[in-house]
Structure formats: C-alpha cells, structure tokens
Image (cartoon, rainbow over all chains, first blue to last red; front, side, top):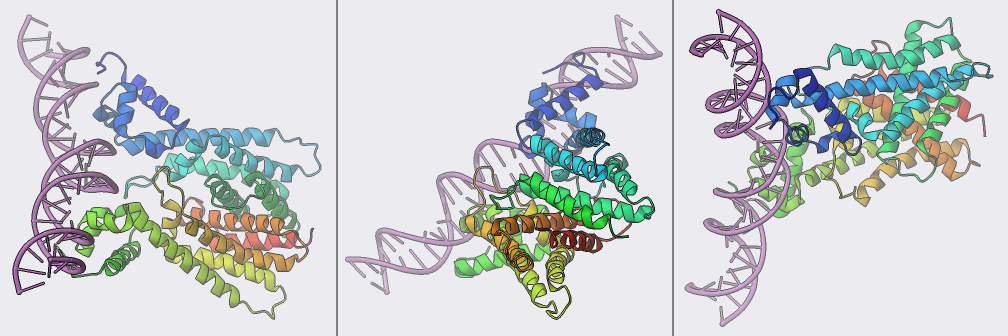
Length: 205
Length: 205
DNA sequence: AGTTTATTTTGAACGTTGTTTTTTATTTTG
DNA sequence: CAAAATAAAAAACAACGTTCAAAATAAACT
C-alpha cells in the first residue's frame, strides 16, 4: 500500500479523479465500486472517503467536469456557425443541439453519469452543480432572444427549456435504444424537431 | 414464516407484486431491497428468487403493468377528444402527450421505474417489454398518419419518435426538477412544443 | 394407511457493497 | 529526542443479491 509521502492530498485527489475518468472511457459508472477504485490508485477505500466524504461525492466531482466540457463543446459549436448564413439563428440552435447530441453519442458513459448519478436521499444537489446546468440553458436563451428581441425574458427562458428538454429526450432514448425504430437516427430527429418548431415559433408572438 | 399451504405459487406471485406496487405509491423502487420485500410478504428472500428468477425480474413485471396502464391512459385521453373540433388532430396529439405527462406527475415512482430499472448486464430487455413501448408509439403514429395520409409510414414513425422523445424529455426533467426555472410548468412546455411543431409540420410535405 | 419419493420453503453461507471505527505508521511539533 | 498530531491502513459493521444444502410439507405408490 502507498505510504504517506507518496502523494500529497491534492495529488491523490487528481489520481482518483483520473482513475474515474479512465473508467468512464470504457464502462458505465455503476460498474465501478469504491473497492475496485481503491485498488486502481493503490490506496485503501477509507482514504478515498477521507478526501471526498463519500463515494458518490467523488463522482459528483467528475459530473462537474462533464458539464463544463459539455458547455465548452456547445459554445464552440455555436461560435463556429457562419454568421453570413440566411438563417443564422436556426443554425445556431441546431449547432448547440447537435453538439449536445454528439457529445452524448461519443462519450456515452460521461454523459449518462450526469443523469444517472443519484445522491443519497436528503442531501440536495449543490449550488455549483445547478449553476452549471443553467449555464447551458443560457447558451440557447441568448440565441432565442436574438430571434425575438422584444419577447419577455421569462418566455425566452421557457422556450429554451422546451427545446433543451426535447433534445435531451431524443438523445437519451436514442442512446438507450428505446425508440425501437430502424428509421432516422437521433440527429435527424433533432433536426426535424428544431426546424419545425422554430419555423412556427419565430413567426408568432 | 409462512408455510407451504398458506398460498399457492400464483397467490404468492400476486402477493409480491402487490407489495411492490404498494411501495411505489410512496417511494422509489431503489429504496426497497429483496430482504425488506420478503419481510413485507412474510416469506424469505430465496422464495422470491425462486418465483421470479432474480430480484430485478420481479420489478420488470411491475414495469409491464405500468406500460399497460400508460397505454390505457393515453388511449382513453385520445378517445375523449371532441371530434367536432376545428383541429382534431392537434388536440389528439396534445391529449396523448399530456396524458403521458400527468401520469408521470401523479405516479412518479411508477413512471420512473420504467426508465430507471436496469437489468443485469448481458440479458436484454424481453420482447414483450419492447412491444409494449412500441404500442405507445403507434398511438401517435395513427394520428399523424391521419394528418398526412400520403406520407410514408417510415416518415410517420420517425415523427412520432421525435414527438414522443421530446415529450419524454420535458416530462423527465420537470419531474427531477432539472429545468431550474420558476417559469412555465411542464404541461405548458409540452403544449408549446406540440402546437409549434405541428403547425409547421402539417403544412410541409 | 404407511412409507417412500418429490417438491416447496427455509435458513445458513458466500461474496459483494459503502461506511465507521480502531489500530498502526509517519510526520510535525515542543 | 520524546510527545503530540496527523494520515493511512486494517479490521469490523451492516446491508445487499444470490446460491446451496437442509428441513418441512405435500404427493405418490405399495
């Protein structure tokens, strides 16, 4: 077993988070136990608990990284849209939605972690986690507000929720193969959803 | 402990399924263990395993009931729509979607079971379970096909997936309070989604 | 009817799990 | 250099789903 001088507390933290990330590259988070994890990093279960408080809380840390990466990916996709295009805004919404979808498709175990991770009954999701999710919504809100500059911010916020939750649903059911269709792929469904929704939405008040 | 003559095999089956249902009235399925369940019904864990094969498989049985009930609720809502209305079809789609949403809202632990239940790695979802989900999609498909009688069945199937998955996403994120908005409720978001989507969709080929 | 055979049901055991508590080892301090 | 503080490990705990052998009951047969 590793001795005290091998790693500082911070080094050990990173060692653990690295092992978790490595695991998510190949398998869902449910398939790793704290005992297996402790073996991977060469420490003992109680050392992990000593640092993170509980096993779930160390996953929550990874969760935060995933949401950060997700935000980054969506933001980048948004900026890459050609602003000379005829309907910039629709393409921007589409870009964000597809970025979300393809992130989930490429890193399914990372993406699933965010929605499968259940904290112990009682302790709520920490503030910094909620804020990360809100940051994602805001990406869409900014675009929608540009489509309808005079619309109430609350209405814009609602619409961003409608779209985001819809894209989320398509992404999830596609990933878990619960659509039972050999027809269109998830990205095509998302495209259909957004083009039709926006076509009607942008006309009406 | 209960003796052999107390219940027939079938009675015990129903006794167990009843206890599971009772539990879902007040708490999520993850909070019940096979040991607690065995105490509830007055039998021993291995008796439950003997009947259902595994603990997960007895939940799968409940899962089937939930999907049946969900289908029934959606079908009923569909039939209740006034066929004299100006846009029957839109109201029918809306009726199905909202029936889905309000079922989830009223019986959250039943609804969540269907999507949270993870079978052991390896053994796939049984055929009769997939078919139950497909039956739900078909409800929507029938309505959509009436809107566009000349459209390819595959395209109709795709669109029903788009809509259903979207409604599912809104329902899920609303139920889990992950929309972080004190704006519109889930049913309003669903209404917005469907009206705008259909308005555009029914016009175009 | 009484004995054997078959079938449920049980109870104990196994290998896990996350966490708590105690013990041991190492570092820092006086 | 010894004493206090700290960090890691080891052991113990309670719970989990599942397996397996033993006990209790019902059915079958002479």
